[in-house]
Length: 164
Image (tube, rainbow, N blue to C red; front, side, top):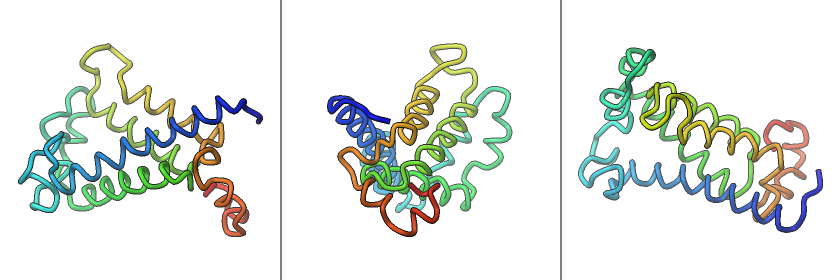
């Protein structure tokens, strides 16, 4: 698929911006930088990164499911490693296919936790993010402003193209 130079710049920057969104969420939850995670309430301070959102922020038809896993150590680690992996992979442009699909799954699960969304009966930023994340592998966004071309040329990735 061929894109204009402008389109390639756009897709590369879009990928980096989405990557920073996930990496920032990871850093804020680990260190309590005072944005969504207050100082003293970080993961390093012993506070679960999933407890607040899942226990008190979830509502709607799936709330009981999400509330039942709130604060679970396995869920905390899975969530935090997912944020870190998504952020790093998208920023570097490696593993964009896996990151795009995994990121879309993560934000759709977060959307399910807050059904119906606050400002619209169906669509919110989680759904928009899911479509963006699914677009990134389709347009091979890792190849623009990233290491995707080199990554895709490795024997390991050629043997396992899902890792592209």
